[in-house]
Image 1 (cartoon, rainbow, N blue to C red):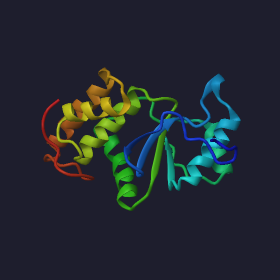
Image 2: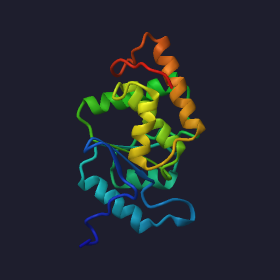
Image 3: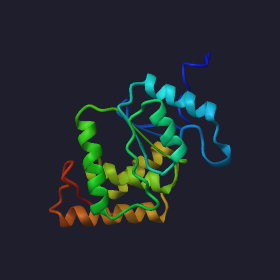
Image 4: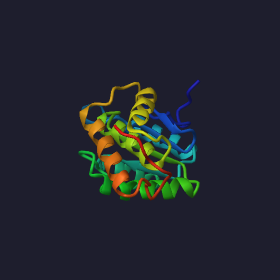
Amino acid sequence: MIRWGDGLEPRDLIWVFPQKLGVCECPGGYGPDRREVRLREEIIWIRKNNFDAVIPLVSDPPTREAYANMRIPNHEIPLLELPSPVGLHEIYTEIARRLDGGQKLLMHRYHHDEIMVGFIASFLLWRGIVNTAMKAEQVVMMLFDLQLGMRGRQALVDMVAWCEAAGGEAAGGGAVGGSA
């Protein structure tokens, strides 16, 4: 039974790493479907579930303001497109630093789209959790129950090429090899 004030789990919450890195839809919804009560209840849930930080992958001033008002640390990284592997390397280094430091993180976009799925797939490859682009694609398709489109696949191809050019190792993780 849900009681008001206990919070509501954010929509489409998926754990990439159980109880360490979750991804979800934008709390409260977005655009004409945004609901302030749901936003507040989802932020209460985030706080009660001890997330150290929220990482919005979109620029959303109303959600950012709600986080500030409810004292939820957030570090916005608005992604309209997936950046080059060099840009992703900088972002992934910070995320890896936080995870390695024991932080519990929640990321969100408006919904699970190709940018989010490609971002997570490339992170898994960069981190050395999987060692080929094909395996990264399989893992995220299973996690999100979505097909990875051309932009997401291109991000993986670019990440493989960058990792190989960097000597086969991503600075934040283990060895990366294989091909797309």
